[in-house]
Image (cartoon, rainbow, N blue to C red; front, side):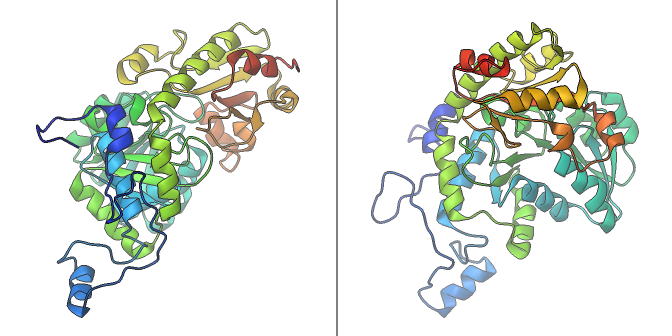
Length: 393
């Protein structure tokens, strides 16, 4: 987005202004186009629209003005050429792999991916002849060693869910490109407000817009951002297969993007304060938060991210029984597996988000029975501390 002097606007301006296209009514807020189809002036125009000879809206499964505005804004925020929005974050992962890979291809993925993403790569894609090798997220040599002649994609999530392990994006991008493969980064935890994977060498960025992009736990959504040619391939799959984003959800996420930077900064500051407090609690064995000097990749986090983010995970002494007891004692924090909300949420990953993967896979990812994941919102830190300490007011 530029003005007449070709000025490139700053992130905060793009978050509010990028992608806006006004109708003949010249509305100030983005319009919500709740329609399944669009009317053509004549049969020739209908044919030209369907063939792609003429730009314009055709059918809301794959073209809608509200969705287009979201796609343009998110592409601008990530520094990508193009974006395609999907029905959910998992739909974004599915669409990317189905669009770019085929039977016989190989994927190198970081361990510790979100539970459903692990299921998708480990169980679903394998049924279609796409093999995945999981490697330790921070072990660059392991990525290199896992690559094969048929490796087409490297897929990483950084920070990881729920242990906040980081992947050195630039280093893995170099490995992937040396092997002739693409690098896709799940940027859900950081968002472009804190981390820009494309600028670090990634080819595609995946989002669960359900999380911080919306920011208030209202709707589901996903997105794939990157170079125009790659995104076009994903769009072609979405046009045919249909995992599309609704115009209403796109409009809600557009509104969320307007406050993205403010929310991420404030929630990250709250998370750091809580992480520091948790480290001092005797019943806490370990805290996982990139913003803490005790995090093994703290230096990488400070170099690669704008802050430590808003996710804090911690091990409590006493395993599942102690973890459940702490969770059940909360009265303010919401017990739910969703994250990215302005309301703080708490969950037990081993029995919720990662409950469907095997115990062996959980152990390999470091997800123990005493692990609790806290997605920090905008409440008073003092109130959150009191809630975790079992103090009621």
